[in-house]
Image (cartoon, rainbow, N blue to C red; front, side, top):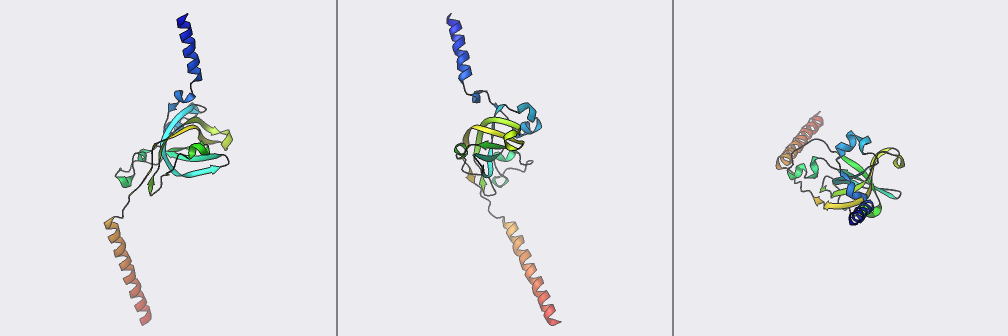
Length: 178
């Protein structure tokens, strides 16, 4: 009898646990290459928040990149490695508010992990591929990206500007002489 009660208790506990416990961690490549496999399933996805939060009605859209540049930018010494890739996610304003730094040319965005239901063709959002977020946490806060100007490029700029001024002056003097 004791085993039966233990089995029933464990079964009920398993049913009451949030679906997050069964979420599969996926990449944008997996979602793009086989959307039917993941459609309607609860998944976990992590990436760098890029661009900006876009509020549309009661939803906030975020874009999370999970490409090679999540670990660092070229300016931070990472070698060029492929293209940007990521996933659009839809969150409530309360969840989205946790994201404070978005990646752009001056910032490395917050690294965010989301869990939610993936839609290969969301009927609520005109058939867009999206992930409806049920939980969001910032794994690593965003940072400013240092990108000082390269001395060689500044020299090239100054030389080109000087050559343009000399050419313009020569053209103006020639025109004035005619």
